[in-house]
Image 1 (cartoon, rainbow, N blue to C red):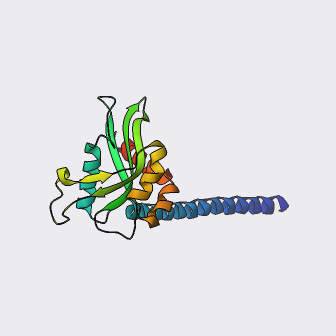
Image 2: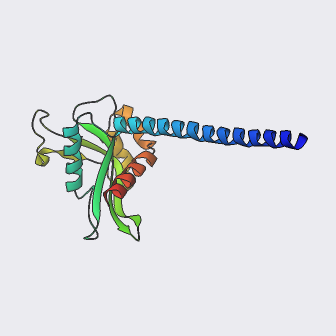
Image 3: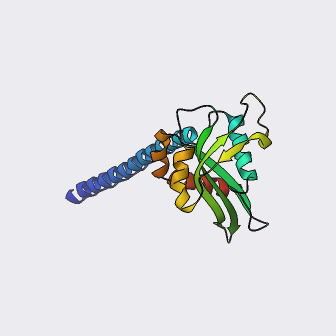
Amino acid sequence: MKLRNFNILFLALIIFLIILIVGIFIVQKFFQQERIKEVSEKEERLFTLGNDQVDKAVQEYLLLQKIFSWRTMDESRNFCVFEKIDSENDLFPFYLWVRCGEFIMQNNKLQELSGMSGPAKIDYPNELSFYDLDKFFHTVPRAGSLYAEDIKNIFPLNLQKQINNFNSQAINERIENIARDSF
């Protein structure tokens, strides 16, 4: 009788542990999905100018400009993404952190061949037009010792600290994900 009670108790304990482990797994999955949703919503706000047509036109413009996007291999693909630095401004000029890269897939592994990352002022003369790519223009800081001076001359004072402390982790992950998904 004792052995039978022990076996029943042991079996109940095993069932309880299995239910507990499955419950923990379900809760973790739920919170992971909520976090992914939260990050996705945050990224949507960061990586848009608020209008799909403007987003697409600016992205196409960046891909056409040699200072942002270039190729070193024929079989590579180029991508550009941007993060809006000035979240308060919904009109041109836009102050962006631009991240462009040239990628290939080699041995089932994504490889970046070349790229750039940096702040840029993107402007357009007439917001009511259909975004002629030839009418866009940009201003970017020069490299080296002139960089700090150009940041002061190109960007409003309230954005300069943001630019100097920019964390590129999210924008780097975004361009890599877009590149990986395209191959």
